[in-house]
Amino acid sequence: YLQECREIVDETTPATNDEWGDAVEAIEPVIASLGGMGDPRAVEPLMAMLDNSWGHDSAVQALRMLGDPRAIVPLIDTLDQGMNQFTELAERVTTHREAILALVVRATPDTFMALSQALPGFYVADGPCDKYSLSLEALMALQDPRLEAVLLAEMKSYGSHCAGDDLPYRLAEYYNHD
Image (tube, rainbow, N blue to C red; front, side, top):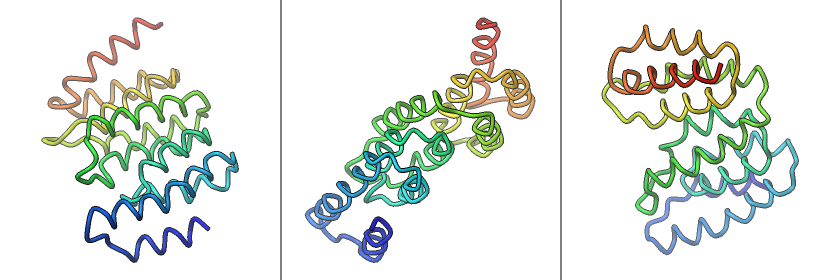
């Protein structure tokens, strides 16, 4: 059912705010019910919905309810997807952060590997640091013993901007926990 809704939504571009609202109203309950069912088969289609501005925010909440840590990297990656005139970046960062930190509780060693491998791709030399900072925060929350090596490697790779501000602080925080 979600796939059918997604195809309809993808084929339609709202011309007015009313049409936009109608589209969101139609798909949000479907997405919410998928999250509420607890069926792990819903994780993949919901992660695909993160790329869709119509269902993005509902998909974030549904993925949080499902609790599958595979959604952590896609949640970070799509932080700026689906932004529209109704969404503010600060609110989006907060919503994603809450979902990601809820998912970290169920993380596996594979989650750490996926996130640490994706981390360099979230670094933007002269752009916003939200994805990179959120990735670092998620890695810290995982409390994996391999974190020190990742943080040190990142410090060697990037000398300024996001990394220059965040990494020394994160490394000091890591050493204070040991």
